[in-house]
Structure formats: C-alpha cells, structure tokens
Image (cartoon, rainbow over the protein chains, first blue to last red):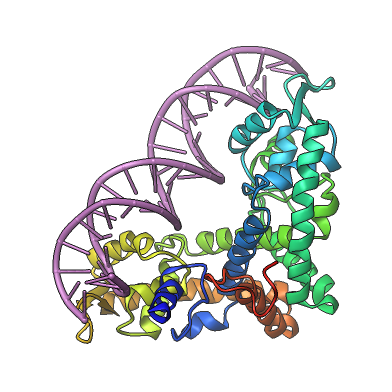
Length: 176
Length: 176
DNA sequence: TATTGTTATACTCTATAACTATA
DNA sequence: TATAGTTATAGAGTATAACAATA
C-alpha cells in the first residue's frame, strides 16, 4: 500500500524520478531535451529552497540586477531577463508596493524610470541570495567543481548564439 | 533612423542580444541564470526553426516518445515530460483530433490508454525531427563536438539530482 | 516622429479538485 | 479503496496593441 502509493506518486508527480522505463529514443541523445528538463528541475529546486522567501520566478534576478545596477531603467532590466517591459511592470509594481524598490524618474530622460533598492529591498535580496547560494552549491556538486567554468561558458554561448537576432542577418553584420 | 530602430529593437525585444551594458553581478557567475537563459534561447530557436510545422512546446517530444514507446500510457508519457496527466490531455486531444495519435484502451488495464502514432503522426514527427536535427546541429556548433557528451551528462545529473524526491528524504542526507 | 513605460486584454501552459470508469 | 484519465476551473507568466508623457 505504501508501496503502491509511492509508485503512484512516482508516476503522477511530474517532479518525481523521471522517465524511468520509458525509452527516450532520439530525444535521449539530445541537448535540447536535457537542457529543458535540467532547467525545470533547477528552477523548481530553487523555489523549494527559497520556500518562505517570496521566490517568484524572476524576483531574485530583478532584485540582484537592480542592486548591481542602481538607477537601471526598466527597459534595460527587461532586456537583461529577456522580457518585454510590459511583462515587467506587474512585478515592479509589486516590489514598489512592498517597499522594496524605488521608481524615480531618470533625470537624463524623464520618460524613463531609474530603479533602486530600498533597505527592505536589499534585505529581501539577501534572504533570496542565501537560498541562491545554497542552490548554486547543489548545482556545483552536480556539475563538478572542475567543470563549472566550462559549463557556464557553454551555456552562455548557447544563450548568445541562439538569441533572436532582431532584423539583421546572422554574423555578416551588414545591416542591409 | 535605422540605427535608432535597431537600438530600440535591441532594447525592447527580449529575444535580442542580451544584457549588453547591464552588469549581472553575482548572477553572472551563476549556473542558474545561464541555465535559464540558454534554455529559453534554445527553445525559441527551435520554434523559429520549425516555423510552419506546428512546434508547440512539447509536441515534438510527445510524438517522439510515443514513437519510441508504442503503446505507452498517458501517465508514463506525462512522467517523461514531467507533467501531470491533466496537463497532457489537451495536447493529446488535439493530436487525436488531427489524426496523429490513436488512443486505444490498454488490454491489460482498461482504465489506461495505449498511445500509438498513425502514419500522419509519424509524418508530423518526421517534419519536426528535421527541424530538431538542424537545431541540434546549431547546438553542437555552440557546445563544441568534443564537449557534447560531457555537457549532456551534466545536464542529466542536474535534472536527476534536483528532481523532487517524493516524500522520502534526499538519499541518506538528514532532512534536518 | 520616436521612445519609455502603463494599461487593457488575451493567450498559453500548468496545476488542483471533483468526477467516471475500471481494478 | 486505489488508480487512469477527463473535465472544469483557476492562476501564473507573457505578449500585443493602444495610449500618455516625454524626447
């Protein structure tokens, strides 16, 4: 019975063990499939880790990026996490409402907002950072210390190499 | 003007170049951040590649998995892509409606469905496979042939190592 | 005219819970 | 009672388009 319950959980819970007996076929030799499953697993693991702190998807990244770039505009912040500004607005609204972020008109361009963290925002970031550090330690253990730098380098190459090139062709650089 | 438009596109389009001048700070040394951005870039690149074929998120994986495991049940299929069966139902409904997949009651357990591909389903899979092969070639180029096997191995370790262990503690690690 | 950001709106994906049919 | 799968429903997260304010 406990046995059966465990089997059910293993089958039914998508966060569970994984494919098991299922043959992955061509997919199993693929970077794409594992890139996705690894990312999802890592993402969920971080959310579990940060349980208690509010760990919504990009919250930590947003706080960390504002911290690293005080006065950053919403457009630049959106670009850094590859989202539209309109997608960012609700998250920032929440952060402002919570007193974590200050939205001040940029002096140079009064259409733009300059974002900065409040003390509370820094504290919230620190709390998430603690989870993130542990999470990275987990990842390190799995990646292997000696592979870490190479692994990150490859991920960066993928992110940059496959990014949608807006309009312009792929490397000849002539902007037509 | 073309210049300004390009700058706007680069700022506004989340699929564009990337952070640019933005300092990533701690995030920039992190596996997590690049794992996510790389996965998203790869995912979007595949969708672009398969443009024309219906490349909705897991469609190719679903078809490929049914092909590799004829008669697979919906529960096992859901587990392989780490989703709930209820999340899979709409996709399968569509595939059945399109005449790509046959849902037949399993003889062993008449509650379950045994899934198989029709000729049309195989054809649809082949079309997506062509895009997937090209896509993997792109990834190979970025990953580097000599790194590919290690890279996949690491991704697998992450996916398996960080998967939610249902109930039971983490392999002897005290749950504190 | 172009650009920054907001608002309104819609869409996709996923999960939870209640349910049916079978075991 | 337990399990396979469906249905109804709700909630994230994101995008597009129209808009206001500023450049």
